Image 1 (cartoon, helix red, strand yellow):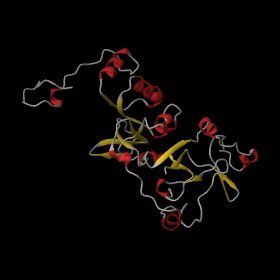
Image 2 (cartoon, helix red, strand yellow):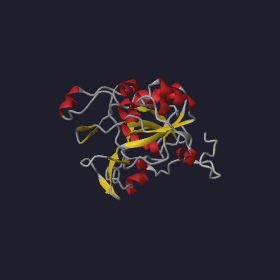
Image 3 (cartoon, helix red, strand yellow):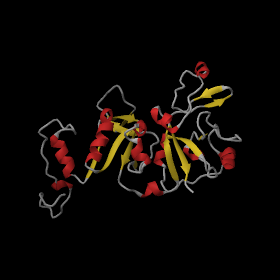
Image 4 (cartoon, helix red, strand yellow):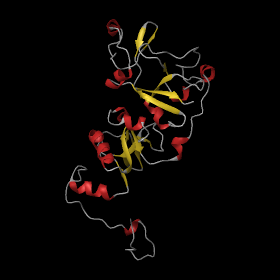
Length: 258
């Protein structure tokens, strides 16, 4: 906390911040950084994605409030998803669509140039355990019939029913805005649903990747289907379409609260 008017301008603000170089290399696992963590009220950072699981555990080791950047797929990690399911971790206030833009020193791996600065788009998101109003705003939903008539998505518009998984009692929802308001059963939704997730509106049942899917009771797929779709894996959802097994990308299973 800033308490001294170092600049003497009559105000205490960021210009009065006093700092010094670290003695070590800044590794969050070092005693030096752990001491800073223990002293901090809130941690805001971009942790190394390759050590994301360990970093999240490190944060909860001292029960810190935080706002961190992570890869979108990090929400499916077995160390991270239970925190989301139990409302101990959630999406930051920004939407997940489009990723995040970062300045890059590279001159080759560049997605766009803004005012002479090389920029790179990274499939990343904000995650936090700090409350904000947006996460308590319920989604506005259409009924099944309204989705089939008015949806902007070709997978939904014109259908008479949602696809039902062959190995789990749930329906496939390929887009968050296609969630029907009049369905009370379990639904499989994209992981991007989490930036719209309202805990008062929906219950998270689980996720369907690998061992997590097996623990939820997803039935193994018949081995003869492997010839029709080599990407099939036990513990992941699939449904049949025109005689061909379709395996959607990572899904979170949710149910509307009553």
